[in-house]
Length: 161
Image 1 (cartoon, rainbow, N blue to C red):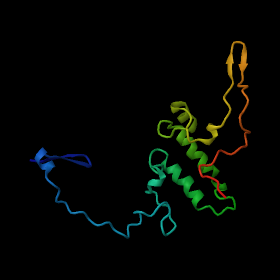
Image 2: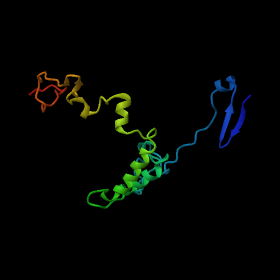
Image 3: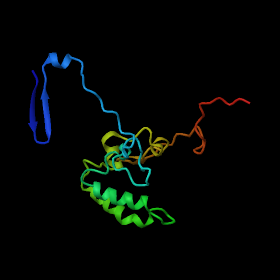
């Protein structure tokens, strides 16, 4: 027989193995097509920001949520010719907040030191190797290049014509 335990705002329900194996008879409520937050994307039909959009990756909540909302709102509603140019103070405040919580908001440099450079980061793919220093002095890779630096990578599609 199942039992219910209240823990603050949560309700924990314990069920027996037999109860768990029985198919559910719960009736699902049809989603409200007028729900303004459901499947709307970042910008709602009325032009407001959907702070519940999963595309924000949770940035609107957490210790820097308020500063993120302030900076993002400033940018979204900006009427300046260079959109968001008046929002530098808000973005600076958001950045300062994020730097106070590096475990929640890792910097790009932090990610590289933890797991190495990203394989998909184009700035890291074709760069020359860093010179290494030995007691005799710096050593540079002097091997000849097989292709000019500005040669585009080969295309996967075959050229016919």
